[in-house]
Image 1 (tube, chains in turn blue, brown):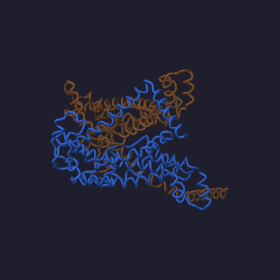
Image 2 (image 1 turned 60 degrees about the vertical axis):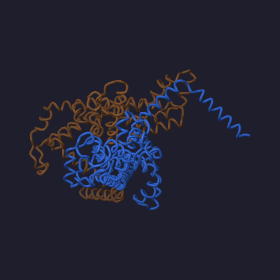
Image 3 (image 1 turned 30 degrees about the vertical axis):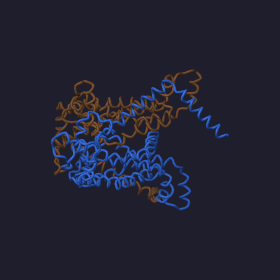
Image 4 (image 1 turned 45 degrees about the vertical axis):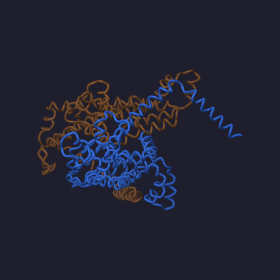
Length: 301
Length: 313
């Protein structure tokens, strides 16, 4: 009986809610709907091209639904050695690079979140200066050359050890955790490393996930350092190969990934989809971590 | 007297050692940061000297001869530099304004929508492009807006002549702003949305009792509430005006639109690495950019403090 009542009242609530929606609500709804469609359309269009054969692409002014499905474009992507090599490099950056960045960024953030220690002020000032002033591209380029990092896979990993923004995010998070835990652990005879690993790190896991995800996305999308410092074809990351693929399609230069039997737009779009599908499938589940990082960072930083 | 001094000094060294010993593990954790920032941020600052020299990589920075500001004289007397500077300021400035307005607009729309599931879905969709690289978006843009792309096919079906989006300067600039809004507006709106979520509902209830309309509530409650955040974010972005978006432009532009879309960063990159401009001149433009940006940050910080905001330095 009670259940029945609840059901009725919920129904009534729903009806009330629908009645309360005024004209403005529908305007807002329509605007957001159009906005969302404008965001989705390029993805949808790219997807349709990636599964269409060349003659359909050329004959149809605007593809709105698949007319003829082919997987030739994807077959060309998945059987291409250059793209697989790029994928391998990117996977290395994603796995090793992310762990490496996370390690150095988190220990720095933790150290700077603790109370006074010799050198803390020095390090903090050293970092702050770099946020407002830098040497620029040319001196950096020659530094990389002199360090012998040019044309090695390490150029895409080693310099990025500490990202200032994410480091400060970690620091603020550690600083917001209760400080008396440190005191009591000290009384029990724990040293700073033990306190960090056993007390604070487990409490910071959500923030660790946030920062780790930011690094992972950055590594997955990495092309800039590759463009500047990598000439060897087998060390180029996926996004860099994709970039070259897109840049050369319009001109007559030979494709950077060698000869393929499919048309360039189809190949490009299949390749683009290959790089964004992993992100698209994870994003809805990890969105909250990214949002958290942004909101926490903006309020405290 | 002497003895007292010595005793005092001994005590300070003792205290220092004690302090170091006390926090040795924290110091250990901080050392990598000192090393990394020194190598990758401070050595390039020393490398700025290249801007004042005829730089020969083989001779090194110290071994290369000074050239009495020749690099600066060359770049400042090159009309191309002023075109690039003008492009940078125009693109940087309007990008700040447009993305600022777009983000607040999106936040307002999402804040006002009352259908929860719809709101969540839209938010997930519109924040996603932030995580794409400009390489991917460059691919989308090149495909959609090319002469035979879907947009031009639509234009053609509507009975117009095809538009040269990628080679007509005006259209291309518009494309730069549009693609930037497409990528970032949803993501940037989150911060305003978070601020709006913090507004006390009592304010809206009181306004309801006074018979305020929805637009009045937005104008008198929501917008004033996000003003501090908005002002802070706006002035913060002014410091980066000369950066104007290297990643975006390098992935979108082509030689036909260099005259309107080349910015300082792309100019340095292309001239130095593709057209053989002496490294000293590239470094000089880079130094110019760093110094002007730094001055802008100082000015903006002062303005922020005058406005009663927290400031950034």
